[in-house]
Image: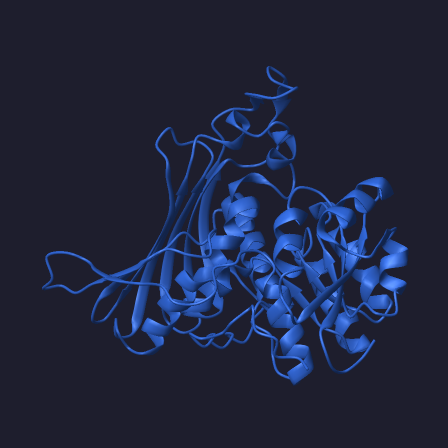
Amino acid sequence: MTDAGPVGVAVIGCGTISDEYLRNMTSFPDLNVVFCADLEVDRAKNKAAEYGVPEAGSAAQAVDHPDVEIVVNLTVPAAHAEVSALAVAAGKNVWVEKPLALDTASGQALLDQARQAGVRVGCAPDTLLGAGLQTARRMIEAGDIGTPQTALALFQVPGPESWHPAPQFLFQRGGGPLFDMGPYYLTTLASLLGPAQSVAAVAGRSRDQRVVGQGPQAGTVFDVEVPTHVSALISYAGGGSATIVLSFDSPVRRYGFIEVTGTEAALSLPDPNQFRGEVRSRTAVQEDWTVTPATGATNGRGLGVLDLARAIRAGQPARATGELALHVLDTMESIARSAETGSFEPVRSTFTVPAVLPADWDPSAATLI
């Protein structure tokens, strides 16, 4: 391990999502991917060979590797807290796929452990760093819409069982539209409006069982354990509010929709699950929207790891932090509680709104010499 040059990275969890991470991280000069790990060691070895990673093996070997400074945790959500804690105990910084943990208490314990160990925790979604959303943030900070007042976010689809070959986990604890898709929308709203203060929500599910639509399990009936439609009103400590609808029950597809209304204009953002897309604005006197081309990085997943690496070297705050992810997790749990109790629920955590990326932030540049 060194305090100069590219930052050494190990990937733990070599499933489908690892391809985009590895494709991008192995192309960034400021990162040096040195190890792939998985419960199935052969899968890790195959993935390492595919992307030119020199070593592969177990999670224990990954966190003990002397050249690894950041462990990228791409395991299943139920293992996120455990694997991240293993890395922190070995003195490694961690980047973890969303969610940070299955519950706020576990997430807070991880951040406390990292603080005591003097290491950092970053967390997806790093779509927050993509050109589309960063362009929107620059416009808001420049005062293009005045003071943000309200926001509307919509994600409505029939349900992932129609296309996912093994969708059962998406209808179990830690799944549903709130916990599966909510992080993309709630992270974006938090970056625009700041920390949430309280929520009120209703939730339900259209049916207790669903059927796998395609793949080897097609026709398999499985139980639905979580709400499949959630509507929430969120108030923010800075004075704004947002309405969000997250649904696996809609025959009409509406997704990738976030609109922020300010005192001077409205802003329509690109899909928060993507890294690119145009930004549109409109005042009360305009007949149509004005399109602003997005500027910034569009590489995809792995940008958060790069930002974390550069922040570690510079001794500066990263942007997609564990604190932000914990706040989003806390917000989702508060929404779930409100739907159960029928009352407003407080959101007790907070975070510092991350700095906007410069428009010329370049993932392909070698900045760590």
